[in-house]
Length: 113
Length: 113
Image (tube, rainbow over the protein chains, first blue to last red):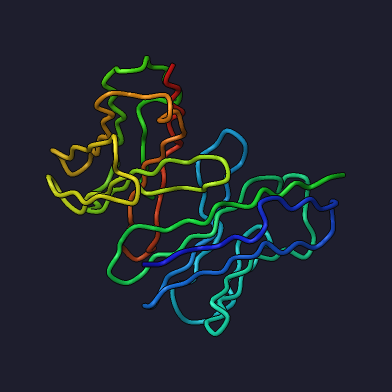
């Protein structure tokens, strides 16, 4: 079985500051990794994903995440956040042999002016 | 892009009622899922289905059942709703095509009174 740990339940940060949302996973088989974002009163939107190839993946709105196999991590980073990035972020993993996603408990990013 | 539609955005039901949550996809994907989302717990898998009439229990199936009579529709059933089933319910599909990933509906916020 796999599991996902998001170490921070809330991350307050000032606008234009950098941010890192941490995600660690455990799995005995190969995995695909995802970050989803949920804005207030909305559904889940895919932010970025790692399937294979380059371990650094980027989203269209400036976020990036790096797959680190040795540390079993997939941390999400942004060099300069905006007020509009305020949302809840979920890390998720799918593993060979189990088609469903396993989610972390979520990190609420609060960007302050 | 695949679209996943959940029939109700908000639902209020009484304790003991039988509740149906409906989810429809507009493509032909085999794998469909039901999750519930609770603060601090992230998303937890209730059931998933890998084809018509095929289903498998997730991590928290107690108190729920599912139905998949047609490929595009996956229903979650609360046989006798209880207050501890008050939650946000999200339906998702696994897109195994060229743009691999998972797409979710907007969610149904169910309140059991």
